[in-house]
Amino acid sequence: MPEQEATAFAATFDSMVLNVGHALLGKEQVVRLVVGALLARGHVLLEDAPGTGKTSLARALAASVDGSTSRVQFTPDLLPSDVTGVSVYDQAHGTFEFHRGPVFASIVLADEINRASPKTQSALLEVMEEGHITVDGVTHPVPDVFMVIATQNPIEQAGTYRLPEAQLDRFLVKLSLGYPDTEAALDILAGSAERDRTSRLTPVVGTADVAAMSRAASTVYVDRAVLRYANGLVEATRADPRCRLGSSVRGGLALVRLAKVWAASQGRNYVVPDDVKELALPVLSHRLVLDPDAELTGTDAEQVVADVLAAQPPPNPGL
Image 1: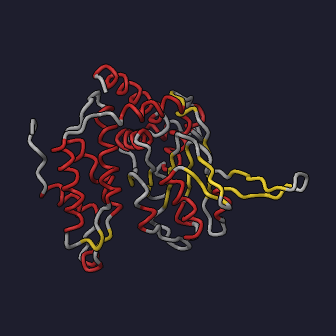
Image 2: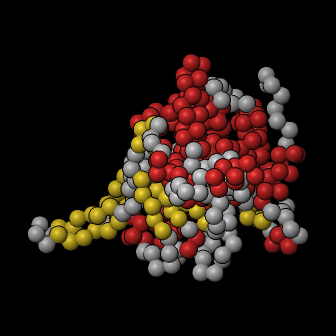
Image 3: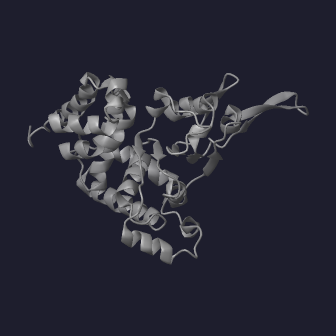
C-alpha cells in the first residue's frame, strides 16, 4: 500500500468512526475496533449488560454503510431455516424455489444470539467462515461485504445456550461496551427526546468502498519479526497451564488481519509490534478455554492474555 493510499484510508476510516460515534457517545475505541473488524472481513461478538448500547452500535454501523442490512432476534423457538432461508415448492412450475433468509445481507445483527438453541446457532457456522450457505445441496453465496454482529447478555442466563468454542472462534473480536463516563452520560440524557439516534445517520461509504478498503488493507506490510511476535503470543496461550485450550491458528490469522487494518487506519502502510500488542486482548481472549482449577481461583481469559503479553517482549524496531 503506497503512503498516499494509507493516508486516504485513514481519513475514510475516521469518517466512518465519527458517523457511528454520533449514535454511540463516548465509546470511540470500541467503535474503531468494530469498524476495523468490518474492513478485516471479520465478525464481532458484543457481550455486555442490558442497556449499554450493543444493538445501537450494530445498527449505527449498518446505517453508515450503504448496503443491505437485516436483524434477527434469536429466541429458543427460532429455527435454522429462519436464519438461512428455505426451499419452497412452486406448484405452478413444479420446482423448488429458494427463499433467502435474513443472513443474506451485508451486515447481519444477530440479537441475543445465546437465546437460540445450539442447532440454530450452528446455522451461522458455515456462512461466517466460508461466506455461503448450503441448503438442500445447493450453495448460495452471501454478499461480498458480509459481517455478523452478534450480541449476548452475560447476566440473564435463564433460557440461554452457551456459544460453543467452534462458533466463538469464528468471531474476529469479542468486545464489551461498558457504561459511558459521566460527560457522555450527560450528553445522552440531554438528548433523551430522541429515542433512536441511529435514525438520523446517513451512509458515508458504500459496499464497493468497503470491499476496496479491505483489499487495500490486505497489502499492508508485516515484517517477519512482527509475524513471529504474533505467533509467539498465540503459542504462549496454548502452553499456559491455566488453559485447557489455547488460541487456534485462526486466532493468529485474525490478529494479523486486524493489525493490518489498524495500521492503515493510522495512515501507515506497515504494521508495528504495538498494533499487535494493542489488539491481542479483544482478538484472543474469547478463544481460550480455561482449566476448571484456574477458573476456581478467579482467573479469567483476559488475565491470561495480559500475562502472555507481559511475558512476550515485542521485537526491537529494525529487526
